[in-house]
Image 1 (spheres, rainbow, N blue to C red):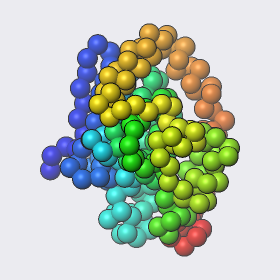
Image 2: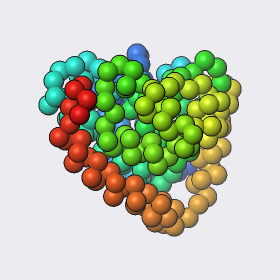
Image 3: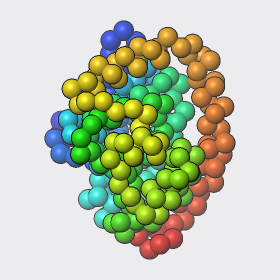
Image 4: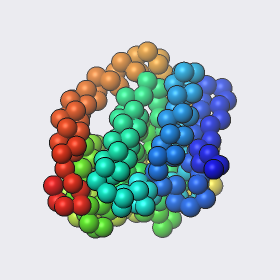
Length: 233
């Protein structure tokens, strides 16, 4: 099977791209590939540009796995949650170049990142779990509560509202959006800007800023291990 994740590096900036030819679903293989790429970036102390393919950043967890029973669901959610938390605590900046739709777990990845640039157009961003019969995991609720603008929190979590680029930025999923043809250059410019930061100070400050959320996530993960998202618990 072709690796759906590519890693390139230039001048202290790593570009990590997802492209499975479909919707960039977060399967075990995709998450393994992402972790391997982030391992390389972390070892090199690189700023990360994290992106997808044109029109599709990521559709969230692989639903074919999510339908295989509680054990497979818990294993995939645990791996995905660990990846999101890795981004939350990554010692160098993680910039999401959101190349298209970002749904469910992908929206949480945006909320875990340091800066997110979207694109103009009919692009959807949101957490649609409730709309498709899944109870939101407690960990996802805590990340959303910490990162979304308060007026949008219930709309995103409880109502499964899907946002366009303008409202996604107002809600807090995006920090900026540009024309699709400008996405790569805009992400590169932001990475160059953030690369000038003192990374020791950045990593320490970032960890301090997310520590209250990490404390809540520790409790949330324990609750999620006892829940069944398909049975409302």
